[in-house]
Length: 326
Image 1 (tube, rainbow, N blue to C red):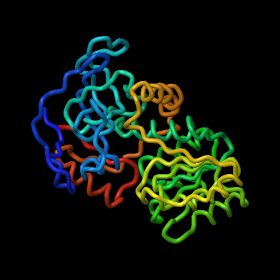
Image 2: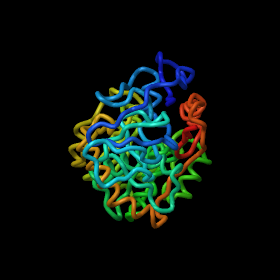
Image 3: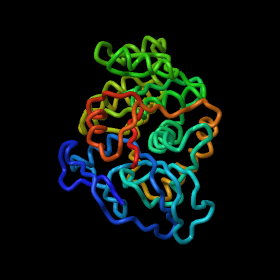
Image 4: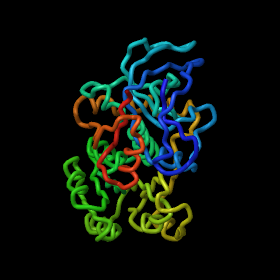
């Protein structure tokens, strides 16, 4: 088969479409013939040499894919060759085939074609696990999503609205904010021109956000805590704004607030399987009913993954950028 390899870390040109050995499904795994994958920020970090795959995962980038089951490994039940699926991966999505633990498989949901389903696993699992399983967003509460036009952001808006929450988003252009509004966002904040702490305070009569989903890390830490409501929950899922920041413990205590930080890729298989099972139970019906949908900016042929990485690095997209396997 062919896959995107990274012979040496570097810029987008470091991604090389090359012939590699076919994966063989092990105990409890299935072999998926890939139709599409999607570009995530983690893939860019891996390409740059900063984010190695977890032990035992494929060395090729790609944290999600969609396709059809080509073979079943020993001990797998409940799936059949030919089933259309999408999957959460530890790596290997940028390839024509990938071996996947059966617990990380999802059926392609009703109303979504197999190609577009590649835009779902990573963002849905990230949002559901952080916003709902960790931060416990409830109906009537306010969620602040940083990077509202990203893949994570567009999914967070839809899921929060589907459960009856109010959604505030930050984005850097009017066009991106308009797209967030189309998905249901209630409070639109241009982070280049407005202070999100002030804007969230105005929109909530001074109460603040009950839950904040943050991809920036250090740069936003202090302001995120100030933007929280009493009993608020800050979920950190990225560090685009740095890794070291100052936290005013007094403010945190006065608000009885909580800060959590999680990553998905390095979790044990059983934890990933539990998240995937929760997504299938709670989110897949919303997708089938049309309340939630994948937001795809564009399709790029997988051998041209470098072009897709450039788009994502420049934030020139809304939603997900897909890689289509030849």
